Length: 253
Image (spheres, rainbow, N blue to C red):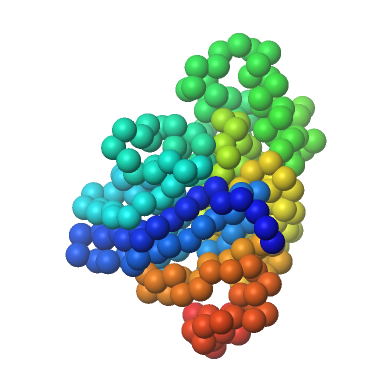
């Protein structure tokens, strides 16, 4: 699968105090593909995901070495605007975290913070984002309703729409379907497959079947190490490392 690199990680190390959580991670993440991060609990995959948009900056006692280049620019360089990083690299969390306000105001929140106030422009952004998140038809007549009144699966797609509203390049998803029923999970998997036409998706998942179904590339983490990185097909059908094989065949984890 020949495609250009959008995130280039080199010799990334991260410590929480004395705990060495990520060890010498190097990886090239391709644009307009779904990359799944897999591995047992506590292996570093969510920590790694959060380094990609500098969410770990908010944790006390974190030390990071190495580099993460987004389109060639090191996002940890001293002069980098962190807000700009997070605009280009959006995040959808495990639990839907909508604001207690209308659907419209939730989706328009990001664009407004970036200075967009024109009503027609905001209407256009809200519609486009909800369509991209495959939920427009369900909510188009209820945009003034409180977003918290919707089902878990709908709320998670609204969170995805809110992330898309500021037009990021990359969408990070941290176990975004783990709290959902199978039907809602299926809708978000279908959505991710469509999103890669416009965006790059990097997702942490505990669900091995999900990773098999939708990942173009897959990274297997274990105890802070990146054990293996390759296409989804290669990782699940022909893993090169015995530890990867043991994990994907269900012998541990």
